[in-house]
Length: 344
Image 1: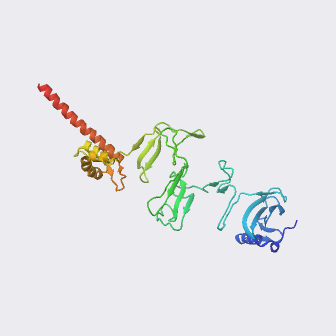
Image 2: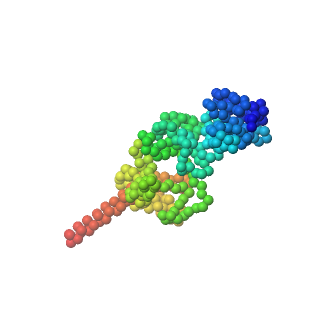
Image 3: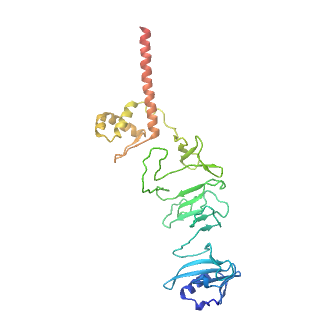
């Protein structure tokens, strides 16, 4: 069949053809469509009616009320009218309000064996990549955080490679803000789990695995599973290991409570954070003694809303010092008792 000339096309198809022609420097073959480096590019409402040779390209135009509403890119696999197949779609420079892609999208890659059947997004670096080079960048024109040594000022989130050399892999997720919170992780569940067992799950979960052959397995004994680091260097402050034990940076001001009755401080702490009014009243004198000391030494932060926060490091230090004071008193009593017995 003879393919229609441009002026014979319906307005929507003609507009689509004009758009394609405007984007490329090419020669228009009015009896066919557009030719790019020897490959014919056909434009029309139905590729089944388009002639073609092997590797020719067709842009199938869908219309709604005479207006182009979608484009499907196809290529010819047989050289026959019936040989058109839907192609993976590559967009070099397309400005539009909405882009809908059916199937997989590849950037700097052509395949991904682990992509879902219905389609997915695969992004690969074209060359070497460093930890501060964004493989994926999320931007908003209203953001201007000013951390421009790490990201452009309107970038509020990014995905990049984790290791400094850019060769070992690992995912780095960064969030940038002009305020306080750079990254917030939300898990929204419809079912809750209250188990206190190895089978427990939760709205937000972190799972640590170790390479085993070509797959994954359980981490070994004493392996660090989760680490909180304060800064850009070696500044680990809190971690969880494979046995479920927690470890924290224990550096503190030892002996901060030597001038006080530490058992009284612990009693006052227990009562001051209790939600039982009777219990608080029972030890109100202890609370009055302990509360200002506990807050000044960083063991407890008291808040007006009644939710008081206790420092794990501070509390552990106070417990150790309280035991040390009790031991000193017991040791003193034992020595005096021995002295009395020896003298008798």
